[in-house]
Structures are given as C-alpha cells and as structure tokens.
Image (cartoon, rainbow, N blue to C red; front, side, top):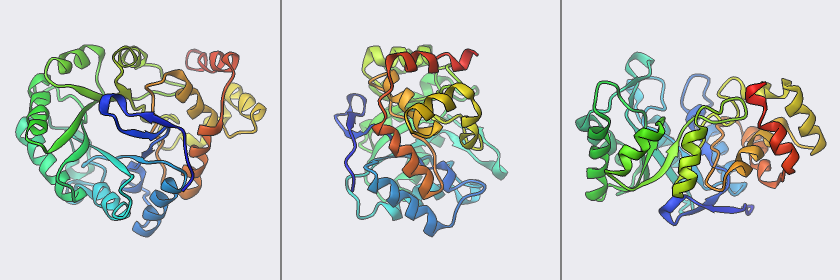
Length: 286
C-alpha cells in the first residue's frame, strides 16, 4: 500500500489520507459488476485512501437498500485500516430520491446500516439531508440518542447551512459536515469557513462537479492551462485546489473505475502556487 499524507478527521482523532473515496457510483445506475467494484475499492486502498463514504440510500431503489454498504463490508473485510462513513435520512422509493428525517426512520436506518456493514458501532454516521417535513432538531436528536446508545461513534451532518450546523451543535458534538463544493460551486463556502473555525472536518462531495461531469472539467480553459503547467490532469488540479483551500477539507471523489480513483489519488502529490490557487478560485464566478 502506498503512503499518503494524513489529516485528522475533524475532532475524532482518526487519521485518514487527505483524499477519501465516494462510493455511490458503485451502486447506482451505470454501476460496475460487484467484482469490479471491489477491485476499485482495493485500488483505492493501494493508493493510501482509507476513508470510504457511503449511505444506505446508495442503491437503485428501496428494494436493495444498503447495497453500497454491503459491498464495502465485503471489500474491506480484511482491511482494519479502512474507515467507513455512512449516512441515513434519504430513501429511494421506486428509485426516486426523497428525504425521511423522522426519528423512527433514522433509528431503523442506523440499525439496518449496522447489519449491512457488519459492525457493532458505526465510526461516522451523518444525517444525510434535512427533511422539510420534520423539525431539524428532532432528526439530529435521534442521531444523538443513537450515539449515546453506542451505535454511533461520531456524528456528522450533510447538506446543511451554517444555521443548521449551529443548531445541531447545541444538541450533539459534530465531527463532520458533508456539503457540495468544487471549483465550479462555492455555495457552501460559508459553511466551510465555519467548520474551519470550529475544527470540524469538511467533506466536499461532487469535488469534480458531479457524476457525469467529472470527465469534462478539462474543457475549462483556465483549469486545463494550469493542469498542463503541473503535468497533471484537470481532475488532479481540481482536487488539489480543494485540499489546499482549507486544512479541514477532505475531498471524496466518486469512482467506479480503477483508473479514476488512481488518478484522483495523484492529487495528493500536487502543490499549487498561491497565484494558481487564487486564479482557480475565480472559476466559479467566471
């Protein structure tokens, strides 16, 4: 296994590589075979990646809920160095993405995730998305209860605002926030800054602009030019920008192919100049 520079995962005390792996592409439309999915996860481990992001809703529909978690459990059975972060609060009726933040649902979702992952306690459990039908404090309180019962070690949030982060902090110690963030989307910059002030890990999802768009980010002239100067891929530059943007950031690029996760891991070797960091930061507003 290759070594990778390490970062602490927020206040957890857990040391992880500076890049994680988003595992959703292994379980949704266009997914590879189980065998290829496991090979991709093992390739990530070989690159020094130890944090794997999943959710009970990473599947095709409600009938196979927990598909991604079961895949990770199988792939990581003999890899105690791996850390799995999962989420609850989304449901997939007939393949749709809907929210369910009811305390009873979150309790059942956590129990199901424990079984799917084959663990007694989930290292990092994140509330997937606020449910407009349920008071946010009730949802977070349910997750806090699960932590007190020993079923969750660390609690995280996903898709939240600064106000929601502060509300949650009055209920439970927050270890991480997982919001969308990339060169082209700075909508969560205020949340990132607050996480940095508090020492909370920020896990930007869609760090390469989302599934289906990652391969095309090189069409941006600024990004392509800077990538050429570093003899790196546009994807590596996009991830390197995130890594250097804040010491609490840990990007989780998704991958369904070995070549893609190996390419992403290469971002850990790229150090951008201050001038290039500044120029790259203007892409979202161009």
